Amino acid sequence: MPLRQKRMGMPMNDQLSKYLEGAGRVAVAGHTRPDGDCVGSCLALYAYLKENYPKLTVDVYLENVPDAYCVLEDSRIVITDGRDAQPYDVFFALDASDKERLAGAVKYFDKAKKTVCIDHHISNPGYGDENVVYPKASSTCEVLATLMDLDNISVKVAEALYVGIICDTGCFKHSNTGEQTMNIAGKLMRLGVDFSRLTDEVFYQKTYTQNQLLGRCLLESFLMFSGKCIISVADRKVMDFYKAKSSDLEGVIDQMRVTKGVEVAVLLTEIGELSYKVSMRSNTFVDVAKIAGHFGGGGHIRAAGCSMSGTKYDVINNLTRLIEEQLKNHD
Ligand code: AMP
Ligand code: MN
Ligand code: MN
Image (cartoon, rainbow, N blue to C red; front, side, top):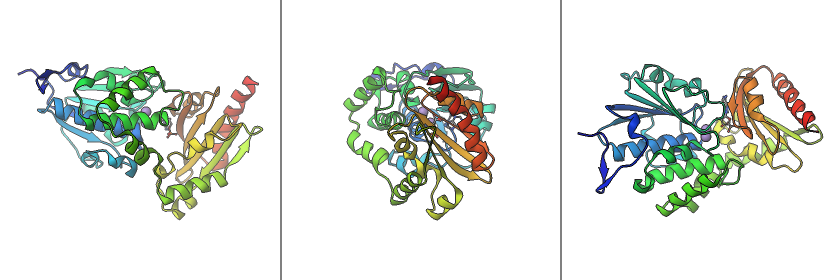
């Protein structure tokens, strides 16, 4: 019995079947603190495999899915606990630029018979047995779409892919948006994706807490280097006051980035004692992936991040030294 299944009498024609030969148990996992592309790609792959390879057992491992992405069907099937499963035949790592970013799922990656890494981060070293890493793609969802038979996907799969694409492209406005992105998005629309509703619910709608935090971060932000760099810190006190999670800050850095005259935006979130999550964005020339890479993080030229320890003053000093260097070299 061939593994490749047929739907509606149409033969499947995808690039994923070659990774699934002889497989019975499959794991799908994304990166720590999952964003829309991470959740979208994991749920799209899950639904696609369940629909087209019904004999497979598929487990999805993610940390807590932020509420905004729970509009996607299947968000409840995600496994967040650290259960000890038998080794998987195939482990798909999605949107995770390095193995450690898989957080709690690393143990399944290490024991899996075959690992497949699907990603779009320039800093990805290709840590899987098989690697499909396209740094020019807007999102992991875009890469994943190129591996699927898009003529034979359900609306559920299409919506999950669409959500990932809009989240990583800022609704098709970031410079990572390309011709292929738009072609795929067009195909997803044709399949019946409710794009207006999804765009509002996933991207624009904010809780009251999120709006308050946005205001607070903008109020407390400051400019450096003649207004070319904007920095803000969401410290524990502020986060606790609003009872906020770090995912409640989604979108704050994007508003900082569009401040007139700004080239680099930096948002620090205090995630533990003397420990900060660093988010960086640039507009035209500063390579923030290089700066994040210097501190053990990664990402893309225009959007990157890392974790850093020390006081907020240490962190800001260390980051701004490298930012200033790039700003000076450009003058
Ligand atoms: P964020 O600012 O969290 O939205 O992240 C922007 C980009 O940087 C994303 O593509 C992330 O994958 C990447 N990134 C963020 N934090 C890290 C980190 N600690 N290590 C590697 N990449 C990161
Ligand atoms: Mn991501
Ligand atoms: Mn991504």
